[in-house]
Length: 75
Image (cartoon, rainbow, N blue to C red; front, side, top):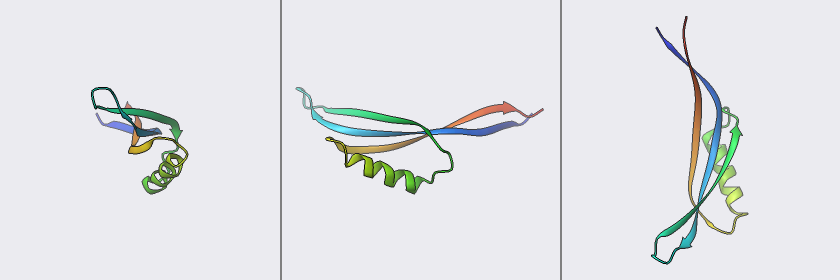
């Protein structure tokens, strides 16, 4: 029995460093964008994330792409 993985939409997560708290630990803020088309290349997504981060008041710390797959049995 083989399992088929059908790629669904992706998500883009931008992680920003919002400074330090009273214990000198980093404060991280997240912005997640859903329904990213699976056909978008990683380079294009990265460039878009960097461009969007220029509009934010916090410093961009990390860019994460989440891939979503729907698994089913082959009959």
